[in-house]
Image 1: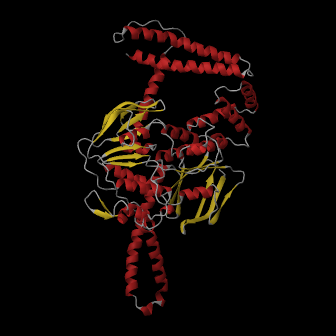
Image 2: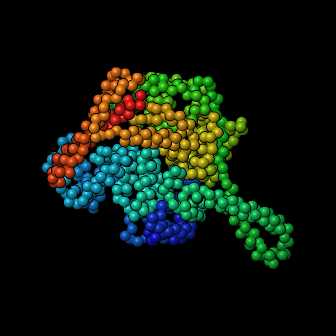
Length: 622
């Protein structure tokens, strides 16, 4: 394997504080490397240095000039006034410009046929049809439809998906990705996993998604207190080796502490006159003292804030209905929340998850039905968008504006400063300005303010975005012991599996399905059902119409007739698809208009065939 990019003795600092020094790292062809570490350790900074977004204060980056680096920023910035099309398609790439022209043309209500025919010829001439299919697949997966829309009008999540789409289309030599799974639904994350692990791609990424880490990466690089530790293996392997290293560190630390105590006693007893004779021992003492100071005990957040008392009636949703712009988001949904409910809210982007949460919390009054909230129900709502803090305000003042003292679950009271310490904000951070916090530290501060409200009905909307894995582990520990109602919206499959016992699935057509089980169990049930349908489908013999079966007792007369009609239609439609496919093969390859028409007919028949096959399977089971 050849080294594509290397960092030699890297050092970088922010606000006069060194993130790391003397780091050396090489990325080789085919390696898929994850950077892990707590918020503020310098992961995003190291990514940007390796992507050559700016120069390090110390050391250098070495790479072959022919190596193309694709960089996905955590919060991408776009040129003002650009449309999606302007950004996605490269002016230097002839194939992309032809595809752009073609995609923009077919978006029009009445495309110019002469222009279409010209583009068909040029796309064939430049062998761009397969590339066009790849680009269309990527744009579709990212939910990008209207190429003429201005990027300035889009949400942060949409912008992140557009930036990721461009990078995937360009297919660089090295993919450098900062939180690539943020703002993606789970189906798209699983598709991205397959894409990144195919074709020997070289990847360097930062992500909090542990399933994604485990499935994609074959090397883990940990940043810990300015040092770098490398593990050749996936995330599960890293956890095993890290535990061994920390056990060894703990043993060394305890030995150093004991030795330091003895040396301190010796220093205090030592007569001044013997000082010159013992200089080496004194130097060793100060060296040992410095090493012991640098090693801090593993800090554990104990999220045991007091929960408000919860009465018998918590929350009832009665026949809720909601639509926007004639699109049904929720249709006749009812549910009575019970003590200890742990619900995962799942569904693709745009299916209405945030709408349902806004109805639950009273931010939005539903068009139909009503919400009855219990008198003792106290919401804690962690919103995906986060809180807007005053950049020039001190962190501790933000907490004190809510309360000087906070009640804990055991009845004790702690100060705002003590609570910040539990949330891994040391005194220096507490008295620093908000503008100096990393994205993950801001999210941690937001989460802390939500929990300070002593909620008994906790709603977490994508809490994992930008949080480091150590904080996520502690959050999970808190949620496992949280006795109130929990609603969790997350694309983090690990968190959904661990925290939810029930799912509300937003189907996208207004239906909200309640599933008893976690996300992995739900996906397994879908796969098993699909496998059953495939097996049943294979049993249908397309060669001839099956004779009418003897009436089944449980089928009504009308259903029996419908089943017979479907068994007649299915083979005919399959023959129709075969006939049209044969026509395409016999058509002159330059007659693009006819080929497109025949293809559209096949798609229409196939769509109808899928519908009636599903109905046939339902009736044949009775």
